[in-house]
Length: 141
View 1 (cartoon, one colour):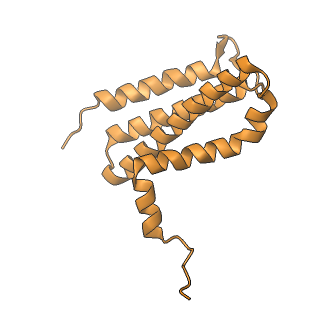
View 2 (tube, rainbow, N blue to C red):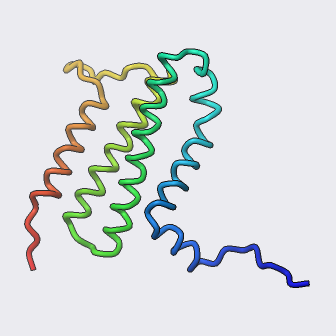
């Protein structure tokens, strides 16, 4: 009988990741499988909490997808506009991760001393600044 090779070659893996819908599916399944036990299962019987956690899980997943796509685009183009965009999505990813931990009760509110501002709000401001820099930057040729 013919024996089927079960190993995935590097070319087929790169081709799988170049398809955006399959990349989004792989990232979604990975995030959900990692977060199901520590974050979702303890709050499954609390309807208001579970909806809030699911909202942040979806936001985290979208931020992870956007960060991954923009990093791949930056590796291909080496454009500073794409770099700023990738960094801004990275800050969004960190912010959504902190919000996910806060909504699940694993992390309390983290205020910056003296100015009494939550740390994720500062990260969102940095994200907006980087995104604006990426959008408004004029490429020199």
